[in-house]
Image (tube, rainbow, N blue to C red):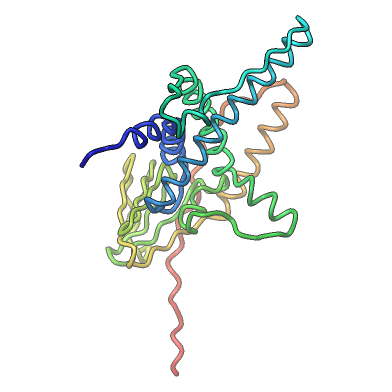
Length: 259
C-alpha cells in the first residue's frame, strides 16, 4: 500500500494532537472511544495546539510593538503547508505545538477528572449528568470514599479495607484494598488480616460495596481538623493514619415478594 505525500504531511502536522490525545487517554477515566472519535479528537486538539501557538506569537508581536514600536506580525505556516506541497513544513512549529499539546492535555485531563464542564452545566441547570464514567468509577473516585466493606456473596467473604486503587475492563472489575480484614460473609467466625488484597469480579456477578458511617464521620472530622490547623499555622500537616471502622454487620436478608 503506497502512502501519499499528503498523508505523510497530515500525520506530521497533526502529531501534536495525537500526543495530546494519548496523554488524556492515560490520565482520565472514560469509556472506550471508537477509532473515528479518536481521530477526530486528535485533529481538534492538534488544531487547538497550533491556534495556541499563533495566539502566543500574536501576544509577542504586540509586546514588541509596545516596547520597540516595531510591528512585524508572524503567522504560522501550518494552514498553508497542510495542503500545499510546495510550502515546507516548519519543524519548529511542529515541535512547539507538541509541547503546547502536552500542556493542553494536562489542562483538559484536569477538567475531565474534576468535572468542570458538568459542574458548570449543573449550576446553570443545563444538565445533571455526573460524567462519562459509570457509577462504579464515579463512586470509588469520590473524595469521601476511604474505608469500605466489600460483600463477596459468591465466595462467602466480606472484605474490610482501605481503597488503594481500582480499574475496570469490558468483562471484570478490579479493586485493590490495603490494611484488609477478611470476615466470613455471615460475620460468624474470626477474621484474619492481610496487608493488601487484590479482588477481581466479573461484571455479570453482583458486587456490594458499603461505606461505614463512622468512616465518613472520621473523614469529615479529619478534613475540618486539617483546615483548622492550616489556618492556625499557615500550612497543613500530613494526613495521619486513619482509624479503622467498626466490624461490618452481617448482610441483610433480601425480602422476596411473591407475585
